[in-house]
Length: 305
Image (tube, rainbow, N blue to C red; front, side, top):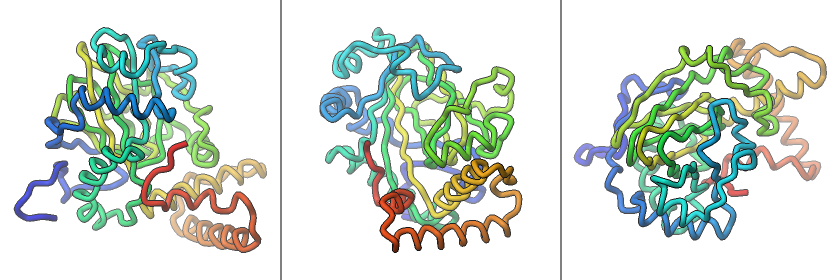
């Protein structure tokens, strides 16, 4: 860590646990690439290559996250939506901004700054990504989870971020996590109002945010004004191991077995992971066409599909 220049993101690093939800503060509010004028230009570039995700403000907490754009379409272009976000009644995500030459510099600026500190407790940062959310007043991001570790930072406006711990099986079942890691399916993720009280609640304004570990369920409720939020995401050695074990457990479920939750038996987890990596190595040697899929999360930057 640089001893003379403050980090862009402030965390209580002495207590930081990469598998625990944590509040953060940051110094990115005035960054020129995160102002609406720059985002309108970025949206135009990303829309041409299909890297915009958007839905109307009719989506609610229990809306299927995967299907929200189809269920509640936003008919406006990215430029029109972004330039008029206060009245657009829309939720918009600029996806995989690290694929844009200009915004890759932003992703690297932030994650290069964090990496030396994170490496001390959670080494192996790869698959870097950036996601920018521009949302109309009172818009909801439906309940869901993602694979990456995530620093989510508020730039403009206010919102409430609800985050559950990544091992909270009351919020999302172990079977849902297994399926998610095996096929990226969120079909077993369902919102229940009674789990709301189990969440960490962050009422964020510019300069505030949260750290969300891999598979930490979350729900976002926008405030009464327009909002800009940015997420910086990545995988580590630990997230890759966790993903392999969940995917293996999903296979075991297909064989009619009921595996214990990942992390409950660390010694067995280590044995299973070592064995499974050996099997995958042999499959690669045999030239199996799908054998390298699981290795993509070791790439420097997230793939955009």
